[in-house]
Length: 336
Image (tube, rainbow, N blue to C red; front, side, top):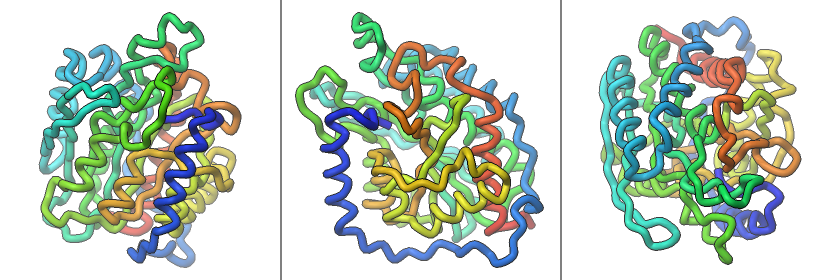
């Protein structure tokens, strides 16, 4: 996601988000944290950090996953094939959209489901595209080169892939939908002299208005964005707090109970324009964003640069994020 936290234009994005949040009257109920649950003892499947890291490597091996590129085409086929090994159903949702400069592109949202017949569902999401422009690179000559997108994109997808693999072996008592959004990271570059929120998150905007199943809804959702940095720091950003306050508190309480309070920091921070805004605002599904917040000048050191490579991803961070999410889900919906 998709603006530097202290960028001057970030204030415009905050203002736009706050206008949305001011009108939010979300009433969807999220299951309350069960009294007396010892989350350290909640049974969850064994998440392999090495396996998840391997999925990051596999995505980067295709090259840039920018809309319409050869790497994008090959990666889409890989994701569909891999998720099809573990999930009961895999659906591809094609869509057409335009980028900030008017260029027409095609996108593909990928939805893989466990227990598709279950009426109650949990949504787990990430974006799988990588950015066309390394517009935050220290070398200005590289600003129009694509980014590798290891942490910003591939890390969230890798966590969902490994979660799909292990959760298929020990399903919770709720349906689970793994949604990979496309054309998320192609918003206005830094050299543009204007800013517009809706140039970002094209796949989630389309999905929220045209869900993969008619009238689809979920009890709650969790979005994973930039969840692999060796120096993880996740805060309670404002869109999550406003649309899904109970879920946000629950996830951070689970993290604290597992000893990860220094990673899932109990701090309220500014709103982030990310896929969860449209899931919340349009689809009406209370969704929290687990997204890196360095607390300094950007999401993480290599954000939107040509150095967002494998060095930007740490195996243990992937495992920590997945463990917190699975403990939350299985605490609500234990395996049968």
